Length: 323
Length: 273
Image 1: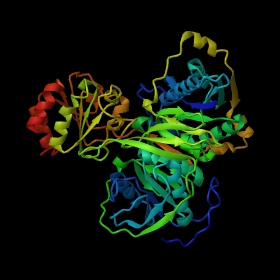
Image 2: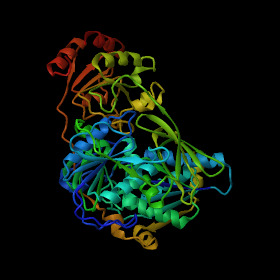
Image 3: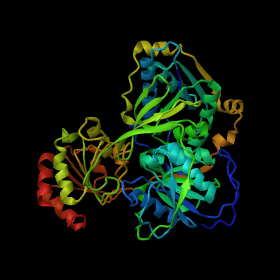
Image 4: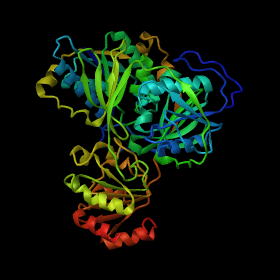
């Protein structure tokens, strides 16, 4: 790491006044294996448009990184490494060592959990859900469920940002990492008890190139099997609107929308979804949007590239058969 | 048990916003637009009431705090009508915007930290996971950081234990996880997600009762001064909004008459093989 000027940070809650060399710390998402998560690869791409070398902070070993990553800091921690307090302590420890000009994470639930806490500890105001990096201090982020965009310039000495994964291509992991361990303060505020995780053979919803989503029109959870068949034929993931999740048709991690995941696949097929503002904000950056709904007036048709007014229980099986 | 619930007045979730490109950062029109309590703040108020109802202790108190213009008093009254006990209105001048252009999570969290410390003995801060105008989702975590408080975001279930700890089921990218917020000097800070509860409609008798519940109104300038903060820290954010504009519209789509036509158009676009 380049570290020509370094001044030890005063304790948290004061804005650092050290003259920083440009360098970026990217905070990796948790994964179940030793490869980087798609959202991390997008965060690394965003970091690549910032000046200076990139360091990657991980909580588990990683076998391969993009060539733009100069080094990997692997955190040693007691207890669970997903807790916001634990992650924040690690980021602060990494920054005390590295004196970064930029700290970048993905705007996932994981990243959004600790971003503000890190900001408070480092004395800087985070910019969340960045969709475009214009310069080292100028960013674009959405407002009002993506119906407006805001251009922000940050005057903080350290720019702390989370980036929307769908807005940045995934960097390719092709390089052996140079890893060093990082010790961090223990978390004595929270403890982790257990988790309930959906496992699927299908591609991850957040990064799939094809998404088939069902809404209230699916009528029940069993009918989602129709969408699963189509998703399998197209190599895609299955998503859902809030209405379908609220009605108990599918688990909550399938939800696409302002609450839920933001997706931008090459192909998004909305089946039996009316198209509320909050749902649109989660999928309107998809390259091609297809809507199948028996109500020709449904708002979803206003964003669809191709709209089919039909009974989904006939159209979807027919499409699955012919595709 | 004392629960502080920050609540925000925002453009109503069902409204399609209008963006006037000639107005610079003030492009999003708010004049004469329907405003409501942020839906996730409603969920926070509801959760506070449920925790109080489950706790059954006469001394429990729910304090609703809102930072915003004169009309925020209506938002506070709604919280009181749902069941909050007392309100604090930190009043901003009419032209100060709450949708990231002027007020941002950093300044709000600083104010809330001051309120927590001034109030003393706050056990829990319950806030919405994000506001639907600025969509930042950072006020809760910033506040937790300022207070060095145990935190849980995206809460889908909250239980208070007898030892003062909170067990929270929270939504994650892959499903849910359960964490424990240990008793600490600082209040627990929990942000509320969609599935935590369904907020109650205030009943007529409770709306009437709410008119008599105390609300302290104090100007932002006075509160900042009282808390020993710097007004610029709240009103001149380090993240300066220089422009607000509409995203480019999607190209207009077309209707197809059949699955066959849909498929041929998708093949034309090269989206399917």
